[in-house]
Image 1 (spheres, helix red, strand yellow):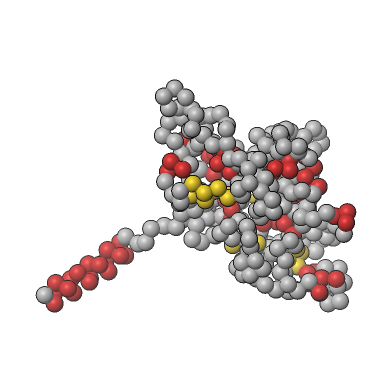
Image 2: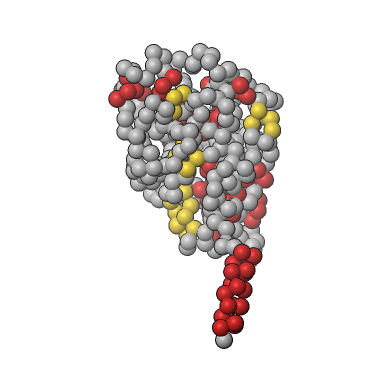
Length: 337
């Protein structure tokens, strides 16, 4: 009997090593929560799509990016729950419910849009006329994670892919660029794949708040990565700089460390590097982390409560990446400051 017990224990140990615990996955719930086996059913597509959008859609999704993440633009849910699936909404009309990225509702066609309030993404907003159809500060052929950026800008902004922010930007098709990421092991955000990158922003690192900063607190929030030495390509401001190149001083983006800072638009700058030094500056009294004016860290945890001299001003310190209720996607009304 004793020998049998020992054998069972040894067998259990061996099997536990051969078959480790299941991988963490971004998406939970039944496949049918996001996918359909067939686009049409009994000659109709009714009930097979989200967001009232017509398909069919790539990868048998029920509505593509916006069909899932913009299911009810005039609705009051910022996170829609279907079974075990929790789906953040990038377009909604929930009062005081904007998530960390902001809310495309402010620029969405059909909802009294003000196109100055954020990014005008294809299928959300009409293209803006020249010169606004090209990202401010765009420079061709810069270095991005995985390759080289566009040689020119010929398309409207998309959610993902070459002309977007999410996914692998060396791949033009938005769905191909992000394919598989929703099911990837994201237990470690190291930027090595799209699925293991912060918010599917290929190559970018950070700490993700589980509710996309809905009801976040100063000790439980997104952790944004920065680098005031401009040696890294994995910061959130580098991602912004892939399109808005001239606002960032990384050498890959045509800048140079030690060059004159952009006067009113700093990115990846530590408080210790401000003109005249941190001590005695207006930033010295900024000691508590703020959800309305977040800062980045070299090694973010999402639990930071304090702002220090080595805390980093980033693009998202002032802007929402999607859109906001203020011009240029700002976090607050600049005219009242």
